[in-house]
Image (tube, rainbow, N blue to C red; front, side, top):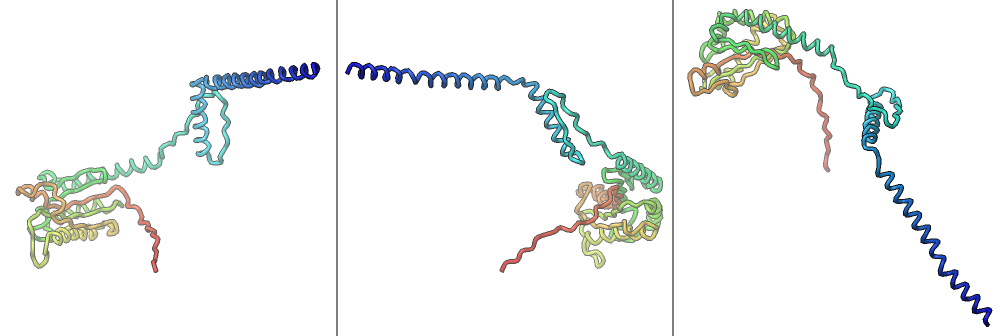
Length: 263
């Protein structure tokens, strides 16, 4: 009986001390975990940014490369230079020649209409779209009429000779004041302005300007440049404008739509 009780006491002592081994292992692993976390948190911010910029530039260069060439980046290397698109010298030279040609054309038109320019009846403007020639209608037409006066026809023929050598689109606009007109030939200012613009267009076409480059538009009283409340303002609004467009119109593109039918 004494031998059996001693054996029981020995086994109970061993069971009480085994949990210390597991606890020590757990504390060791927890300490190692916090050491690793601290090491990861102390990254050099400057080197991290350099590496990040290098990777971004590398991926950008790969996407722009023709053959998809792989670029190797070493940590800590300076950022790769980003390729900058060079301007198209050919396009810039073409625009420069176009501007010079347009400017010389404006000078030639001013010389052809020099007497009217000095009288303030004609204005030649250079805009972002091209050259605009604004002619007061008193120079071209009698009140309420769309037939050109002989002297004005000669002046417009000189302008047509200047425009005959160009390949720019030309738009001729007719404008009136807000005083209504109602005759058998012109029921409203729309018709009067449109026929006046068409009359100038026909003169240009008859004097060598390519008809495919010509367009006539009648705006009536819808686009005044001065107030119609005064005599001077109404006189300024009655005008014919010749717009020489520096930009070629883009070819038309068909808009595709999906047609759905319901039953």
